[in-house]
Length: 255
Image (tube, rainbow, N blue to C red):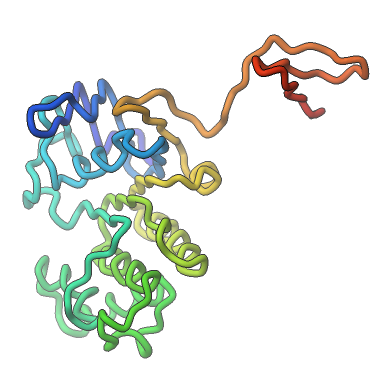
């Protein structure tokens, strides 16, 4: 991870249909090679922020720079360098191999041999053996398998930034674990910056360099810990604790 920001955001807002802004970010930098988590309740602006960072939407106002330069949605300067994986996989009505190879064909017309190598490597990294899945129809995939194919299509491109919007929310436990491992492997292999939206706080706290908390479209803080402030008092047995407003007592375990 380096100190130079991959994303540089200042005074950014996003509003829809001339309504009030659904996202207001005064200042945010994300360094290259970091793993950043975005946490918050539904409707807090997490997915909107990811869409802006993926350059599939344009800010209403403010500045969003990628590697120090502005970029328009779907522009060549960021296309294929930034990839977004949504909660619901969107696959082409084609076999698995063609889904994973599609981006490679559009981007650089890789040779058939190199293309096959990268497609098969991406499928193995998400736990889908190429011999069993490369020629399988998109219709014959379970929900977890479809999400892994969608991730493999992005891994094959080796993006600089991989944005994950609740990637494990609608899949089985085995697929969720494969997706988590493949995303982290992408960072280890290529130094890919990961930005993860998830309600799985434990996963975020385990893997992220920083967790950013959003509420009502604004950043409310960052960190991986919850802090409960004092005053703390001793009980009759000499144990520390805090009396909560509803009368319950929160004990502080010994270190």
